[in-house]
Structures are given as structure tokens and as C-alpha cells.
Length: 289
Image 1 (spheres, rainbow, N blue to C red):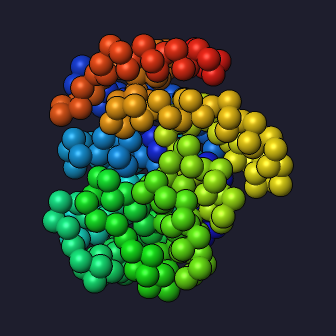
Image 2 (cartoon, rainbow, N blue to C red; image 1 turned 90 degrees about the horizontal axis):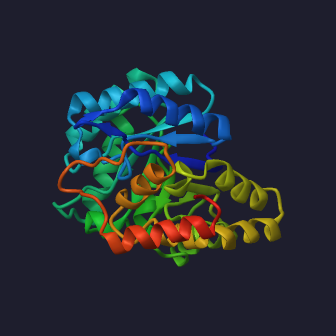
């Protein structure tokens, strides 16, 4: 499986405490028409920790139904229990997902050997191609470059999302194996692609999908100058979408743009007034608001 381009780490819209499936379909339609290569529902940006199992599965099914084969769907089905991750992945396969995003098991802090066995078990038993998800800031444990290289030998492990804030890791992984690498940080997409990444699993593309597709596409087509121009234009937005914990700022930005109702589930809550004003000003400077 070749993964190139922009894959949107989709938000989960809420209305009066429930998942807003109608708005979810509208968001997916906008993403598809904007030309993204794929959509990634119920990952970190989709507030997966606060969704019930039923909601988790229904969100994935809804996204797959609305996308209708027009782009790939990489379902977030990771967990800190291997058995749970396998079960969620099997449900996603039955719904028609193209691949699974597997976050590093969080809180229980497995060793590198434990990580290798965990991801291998999901790849063996889940039935879907696996995109590893390295995000030590949330999970507490990085996937070592050598562990990524070991896992890359598994035919069902197809890529790794790098969200550890390190461009150097792309080079280090590239030095060890040929696994596909996707940036997990909008602001580092261009630097990571310059040293070997193939695209991005993007938060910003919830709001500016066409612009992200143009930026990444320009670089992939050899037009680094145009890609850099777009990076510079939207860098402030990339930065300020993480001024508070993701997905709080992106949902606030989408609400400002009239795309969703601004609603979260505890323990997430609305932005501070100062950060909201900062984000709104940045959106105006970028021409988004």
C-alpha cells in the first residue's frame, strides 16, 4: 500500500453531548471534494478516548459510507490493550476501512520488545495494513527507530506517523529501512518531506484541506518553491492550532469558520479567551477568517 499526500486527522463533531453524524458527513464530503488522499477518523484529533465503543464504530462506518471509496480511510483503532486494539481493528475492517492507525500503547509504558509484540499482534490478527503512530508526548513511550525497522519487515506494517517533533527521526528511520513515513505535525511537514517523508496526517486540513493538498502536492511534484510559499503563508496557523491541547484549537477554528458547533467532551474544554483571540487573529492574517 502506497501512502502519499494529505490524510486528514478528522475531528469528531458533537451537538448537545452526542456525536453529530450529519455534520460529520458534511465534513467528510468537504474533505473528499478538496482532494485529500485519505481521512483518519477517531484518532487523537477525533477525541477517541471519550467515545464509547458504539460511537467509535459508528463514526468509522459513517466516514467510510460518506467517502464511498473516493479516498482512503485509515481508522484510528489503537488502544493500550492489545486485545482491544485487535478487536477495534477487526470492526474497522468489517466496516470497509483501508488501513488502521495504531497509536503507541499509552500509560502502561511497554518496553520496546512489548511494543514490537503489540504491533505485530495487531498486524497478524487485525486484518488491516498498519500505520504505526509515534507520539511520545501523549503515550509516554517512543517507538525506537530500531523497533520501527523491525516492524517494517512485517508485510502488514506499511507506514509510520511521526508526531514526536523530530525531523531527525525521519532520517534515522530512513537510514534503517524503507518504510513509508508521514508527518504527524503540520509545521514539520515540509522539513520532513525534504528528508524522506511522503506526506502528512494533518490537523490543519480539517480547516484548509485544499491548501494542504496544494502544499504537499507541490513538493511531491518537484515544486519546492511553491510548497515553501504555502508553508510560510500558513505557518502561523500550523503553530497556533497547537496553542492548547489538540483538538481544542482546531475545533475552535472550525467553529469560527462556521463549519461546526464548538463542543468538546470533558476533560477537554473550550480555549482561554487570550488564546482564542490569538488564534482568530492568526486566522485573519492567513486569510482563513
